[in-house]
Image 1 (cartoon, rainbow, N blue to C red):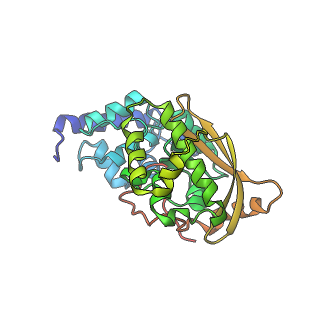
Image 2 (image 1 turned 90 degrees about the vertical axis):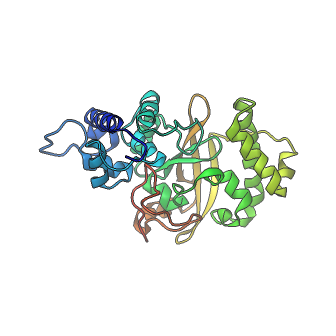
Image 3 (image 1 turned 30 degrees about the vertical axis):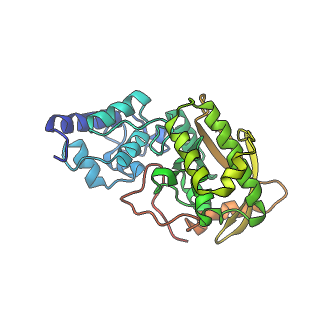
Length: 305
């Protein structure tokens, strides 16, 4: 059974079912609807929220199927609004290593997910302090591109910014120098908040010092500036062109996660452009196409404009 015992498969199925049955549709932004004959969410609703097929999720609840990947477990934890302890338990009974906090599979606090679910009319996403995107709503995917397919060091936008030229296409060239300085100063502040021997932050910094002369020069300046709670940004959308937005930040208590949402900048035509995002759909912005098999939680299926 791909590394899992029959006992653990049965426990996994029972645990998923128990967590599904305790959630009200309104808790995850779904209408209750008439004639709902089961407590909590339906299986197909959990599958949709997690980006899984209904057949695959049904097999998991029956205690069958293939061993779920770490990405699928992260998706299920978010879809089912698991607490940190519940998320860790889910990984253990699935015979997968519990992810370290701060990585691409980090647990998003249910309260932050709840707020994200209520921001359905504006682009919003949750990222880590190292700029790893954890979950995006559909409008954020349409505005910024789908970040769910990145793994390893590339999961961090800071890494991609200094190593992949295409990562900069989202911003006007005139803003690149300021953006680079902002990334480096924010990364130094984030690293300072973490333990001195934090492996993830240390590996990111060492890699960028080795491969990016631009990053190394800026790092030597020792600038420190934790990201402001409100930034004004200019973004270049492939269909809609230049969009000026305010990027607002809500930080977790430990500073390791941030809920970002984007509103139109006053005095611009960005309000109308943001409204058009839902019409033009998801575009290839700076990110590659991501297959359904590798998509993580929180994004609706990719649409083409």
